[in-house]
Length: 393
Image 1 (cartoon, rainbow, N blue to C red):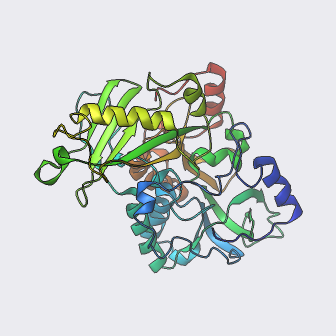
Image 2 (spheres, rainbow, N blue to C red; image 1 turned 90 degrees about the horizontal axis):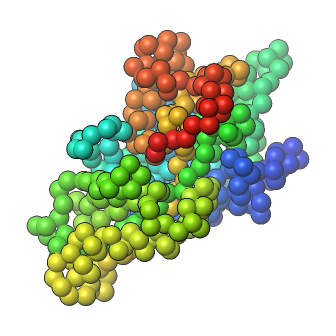
């Protein structure tokens, strides 16, 4: 684990309010990321990426024009759009609480589909960690600054008359950074810095699994398409097969009717340090049922090395109205957000991040091409709270 520097008394006090024993324990809907998350299949296959723990022991830059909090797809793609629009890469700082791409972007089941209502629709798959790492590598080559293992604890407004270098003071365990613009790409952990979202952004613990296939999914039998096997709105499985090595990645919905009450209760959590054995068992049983039993079409027991390989969890962000939060943070000029993707971030971020950058550059909402319901506002937050609506996902 990369080392962490100590904090001043004020920061330490807030950290204590959000964490217990250094492990990011829940405090309502407010929590920093857990410091020692489990590794996903995607993380296990990208340990050699040279920027994984970038600047893990260095003080943060004291001043920057753009400070992005979060190094997942939302943060990386927002930075990409800023640089593509003409911003100097050296003017952009990404702060990540853990190793780079350690959050939901590197923990999903790899199945990418648009959120539409249909029996069949276009979809695809990706290696999400490699995708985001590639984006970050390109940006670092253009001067972007990436600081890992550097959780942000507070964003405070400076006295403008005394702080011409930046309106906002971004506090971390390794010093403060003054920034003109702060962009929250923190998804389920957004309320740790923006407490006004504590009743709007809810964490959900999702789980995925990798399997080493037998003969029915090996050689010429490798699946060339991804699929989502849907029994109902909240009861489904996603399946992709890696074309490079044949590994099958198997996702499961959080509303599976076979979950026990205890497992259902554990879905509401910030804890991505482990997996749930009951969910793993249900997923393994479904996988075997779909692909012709334990012998995978041969009728023989799986050979050593075949079958269940690895299980992992990740924390996604749910919103009561089922759509993301994009735009200017109400009442905090110069702060922006791109978060709350309800488990559909890999598809939605590719339109949300470019739209957000247009807003940051002074263009109107119409120029974003995004639905109006995506825009964050006081009215939207209050309306959702008063109506007590729940996400359809």
